[in-house]
Length: 129
Image (cartoon, rainbow, N blue to C red; front, side, top):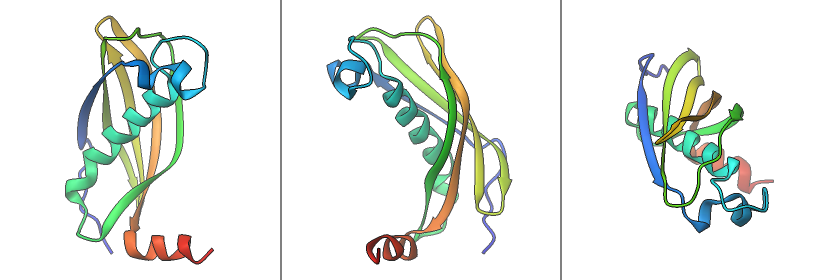
């Protein structure tokens, strides 16, 4: 199946830093700042959202690889946002450039890969294990 997803498809998503998405809450650290796993999840959400409207019914994407740097801490009560831009399509493999910011500037950046899957077939494989 051919998927007609344009290069440079993009999406930006936001969230507020709360006690629920800090390093202490995720167990990835002991302090009350925005957690790296939360930043990664926001980057994945932006990536999925950038292409979801181009997928036919019954298809989805799954994350397979992420390589990012988290370069700045963000305290509770600040907004953070992430932008994903589709930079490469190789069959069902999608590559995104991802960046995250807070009000003071970039907090993280890198690349994220997703694969297009037939949701029903994928879930059948998972449940048959």
